[in-house]
Structure formats: C-alpha cells, structure tokens
Image (cartoon, rainbow, N blue to C red; front, side, top):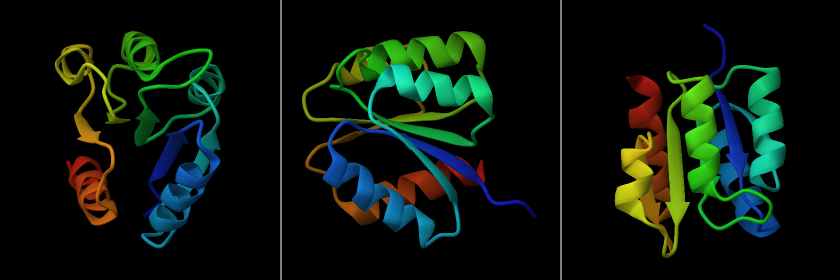
Length: 118
C-alpha cells in the first residue's frame, strides 16, 4: 500500500513545520506550501489524498484555494485550519472539515486520519 500524500498550505513556518513533522510520524508523505498560489501549483502537478490549508494566507486565502481545488479536483478532501474564517462558507465550498485555531494537535491528527480513512 502506498503512502497517503498530504499537502500543507500554511504561511506560518512554525505551524507548517509542526504539522509536517506530526503527520510524518503517521507515515504520510508530506509536501508543504507557504501560500495558496504555491499550494495550487503543487495540486496541479500531483494528486493528493488530503490538502490541509490555513484560511488566512497571502496571495490566495484558504477559501479561494478550496474553491479552485474543488472546481478542478472535486474528489480531493480539504481540511481548513482557521482562527476567524467563515467556517460555514468554507464547508459550503467543499471543505471536508474546519478546525479552529488555536487547535489541539491530537484533534487535528484524528480529523486527518478520519478523512483519509474514508
């Protein structure tokens, strides 16, 4: 069985690194992006089993990234991490789930596992 591929789009380096390292312990293959534009480039070049995105990012926010991914790759699940984003609108536009910052890392990892096991 091949490793599940996860893309993390997060502009805060420390958060991006914590998420990447935590997910690697579960044997997921991880790619990272600093913003939505970079994340979209990754998605266009290879398939992902899950995209985790921050809501507030420069160049393209998590809502626009979610819309673009869902338009072109509707089967790709997206988990949005947000401090004050429009959770309802994110879910309406295709996010599989939203986690509110500050988040519990174990809660996030359990949500990732649930999404990937579907």
